[in-house]
Image (cartoon, rainbow, N blue to C red; front, side, top):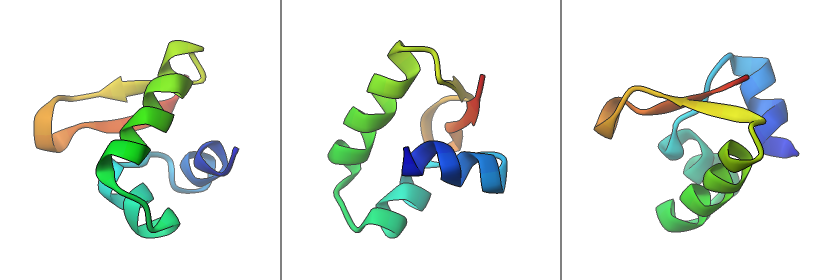
Length: 56
């Protein structure tokens, strides 16, 4: 829920933003983002290092 709140407040979020916010690994952030994308709460935009997530 905090990821959705962060994206709502900032407009978008990157893996690195969320790593710093929650102090967890890139893999852990990716796992949470993948879950949210699967249930269509957020959508990935871009690719590679420029990848970020926005609310659907």
